[in-house]
Length: 176
Image 1 (cartoon, rainbow, N blue to C red):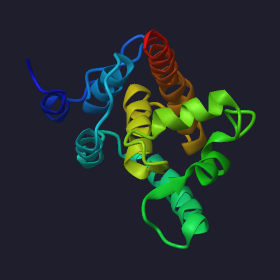
Image 2 (cartoon, rainbow, N blue to C red):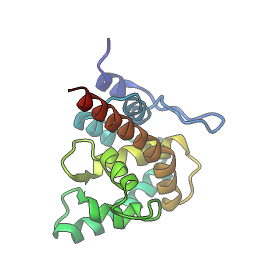
Image 3 (cartoon, one colour):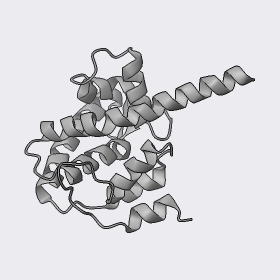
Image 4 (spheres, rainbow, N blue to C red):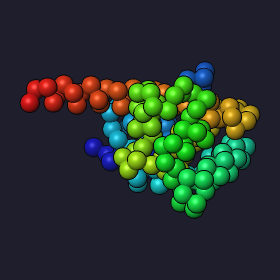
């Protein structure tokens, strides 16, 4: 049995075919692992951060998003520490996709993004979804379009894992 981190760090990048989601890149495998019930680790996020995309255009779109991230990072605690609190992340990135900050659906999405469960969204945690979307959809034109794909095709499905985990926890607790 191979360690998921070994698989993720050694897998070559491939393009998608017929518009289907791809899982044959390091970020795709990380998302597949997450969707299968595994929890993405800090080492996985670090490996993904170090991986460059084949498309310079997508890298440039991610840089645009990073500039916006840094602006929100400065606002939430007056320093760039690569982490946003849930409120800053919601205001900066999630609001177009989730109707209210305090809704259960929004909380589940934030929990899905917060891989290390520290109450903050780290840049590396968010970068997984951005790189996956850029790799899966290399013809993406704008940073906003990349964000749309990352949220709609990446984060929303990942939220299902959080929901399933919550239900399992409640079932286990009721058995005790």
